[in-house]
Image (cartoon, rainbow, N blue to C red; front, side):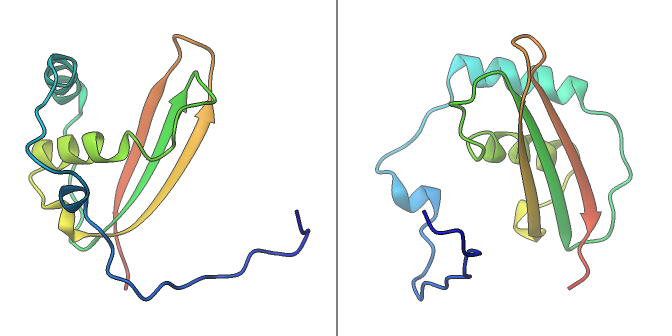
Length: 116
């Protein structure tokens, strides 16, 4: 592997949405329904900034095999439900994956106004 800095790459193709990537309906699992109830009760009241938004997500995983991007959509949907905003208003995101001991998993987030 080269020690050179990575180069910014631009692909001139329309991004594929998750809805376009899968055929047919997707159904929420009982685990997701239970997770939804639990997380919505855990989320504190916060004062939302003015849109557009910038978000910071930090996921504490106990498995190094966990993909950093898998939990984004479920938590983002729950945040938009709890705080009554449309996630299309998120223009910037920063995501971190942290490895933690089993039983110490967590989700951290921050929603800020995005200065364009």
